Image (tube, rainbow, N blue to C red; front, side):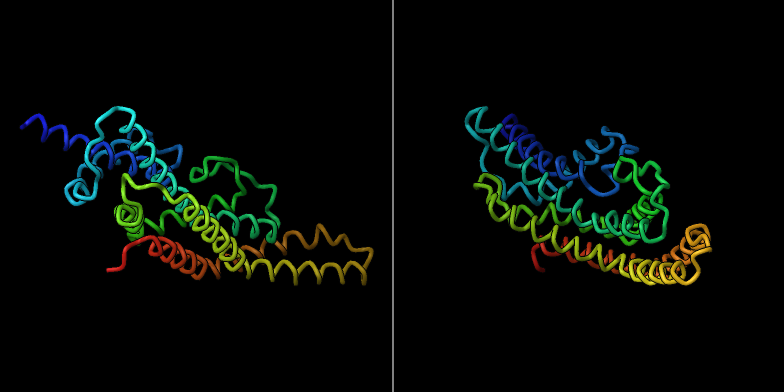
Length: 254
């Protein structure tokens, strides 16, 4: 009797850990190379243990053979990866908007290592990514990421066939909305760049002797950074609102 109870508890925690572990590897802020993999695995195991009491009733019975268990774990990992990718897509507008702003300001040649995306990015992109991740954790919006994975057990019942068609359509809609949001976040800088470059072009035609590039570049950087600083609060507010709404779309209404 005790052996059966222990086996069922280990099975439930293992199945929950498969979904949470796969999703947590892609959580914004936790997917950084500066966060040790062991820490992420330990956090996923602790989370699986804490929520196992409320989710264990939704899990299917233990499969009779090892192959069926592996297939079930693979399905859970697939669902977890889907939610991790969705969260990466939801934070993508900051990365794309940072690239647009960098081109608009004139700092496209200033590259640095971005710990959020774990790659070389423009300086402004890395700064915006760090601010966005800090805003997510400071406003406790990261709770929504965990809650979305917990509620996914009502949307994607373990043991049932995975609706790959619905997953692809949902991911496509999320990505298209994210691209639209990125254009909105970068809109002030894009308008400034269009206006400023048009003025430089007219100045170059009126005064051909002037070195427009050397005169205009410092002014472009100064004006672009000024507009970015003035719009930083609305940019982060708009991003956080869309990030939260994107996660709420995958949560069960209460």
